Length: 139
Ligand code: TYD
Image (tube, rainbow, N blue to C red):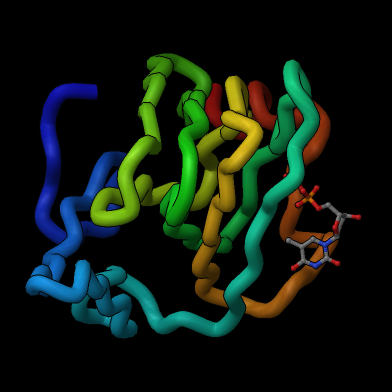
């Protein structure tokens, strides 16, 4: 994906503001400011073995924002019609994953720590894990 959006609710990369000095960099993620939703949950994925992929689902209502705070990973997303491959390889840039976007994570580097901010608490009922159901819903 070539375009980088300001904090928006649509699919895409968001460039985060960083405060850099002689002692390194700091990035802040505030609800409804740096991230376009109210942050209700934070989780992170790490230690993904070589060749392993994750995701393979969409959400009915959940909004998520993913940042590789270390290492790199590719976020492959599609809305049932178009596909996006978003490289996440720097801590000051993240991918917005709106509802009804199928997402898969591939090519994790061994040192990848993928931080995910979510707009709601965990709810298995919000997941669409069946690709055929996803295609029916997005047709
Ligand atoms: P899942 O969302 O399927 O992971 P990924 O998309 O990265 O492959 O979640 C993996 C497991 O962890 C699944 O059993 C659900 C559980 N889980 C929680 O209990 N709470 C959470 O907030 C998340 C994200 C997952």
